[in-house]
Length: 326
Image 1 (tube, rainbow, N blue to C red):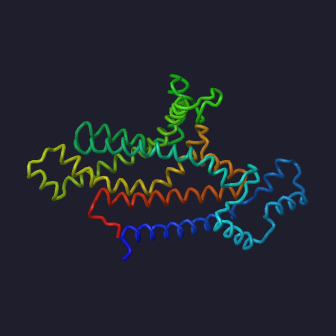
Image 2: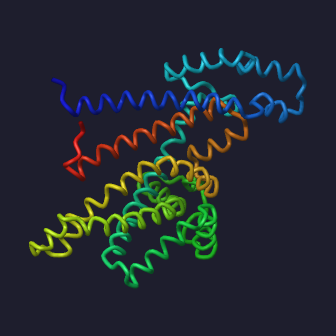
Image 3: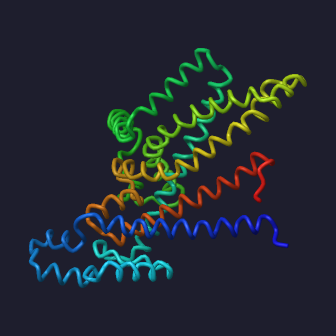
């Protein structure tokens, strides 16, 4: 008999392949609906958009083929993990993504960790003092962060901490001119990471604060909490051992839903802070009509989102033993 864990991960892997393939097909046809292509952009930049020159470029890029033929070639390349060639960048799409993906994952991971830890802590503090001044202050701060546009937050942080106080660098990922290595290099990257990660994390911090507060208040009214109180357990032990653990489940659910939103927010944040990640690369590819590169980035993003949701499904079983892999 096949173990439950093997069946679970096998089923999740099959679902991942089906979902990612469906997303790739949808993206292919949606991008083909957009006006213009890479040949028109290159011809316009060269200043010689003659019909002959455009035809030669389209033949070189394979854009002269009928749409069904282009789609068949795309599927064949996709199944062999060939994401194509970026004619704008002059490099294979997979190589470009491999160069930019670590920066985006670092930004996403840092911002989500910051938002989850600080937001959950603020939600717990607000729930334990519900209806008091502390609850009002925390809820007001969360609402302020939620209502503030991400790009405006980023600009204000640059003005305050980079221009006025000169504590942190304005943008980029490293100080290339200084040639740092080893521990100095890691410190330099961390200094450049503070502002973009904080900018992206503040919005989601507000969401997790409000959600954690509501979940805590709801769990505190459950029968098992009343039983723990009747047994004479300390309030702190009840809150952190019983209530918080169960209240984290809806927060994790929201985290899985918002992984895609974090990627979308990364486009704005990476543009504002000149962060060399996939979001900024996708922004450039969109305006340059580099469809091969854009399709590759969208495919990579969908894989990240699906894997993150699979990991969260597994975390449910860690937080709540009543939830089984089967």
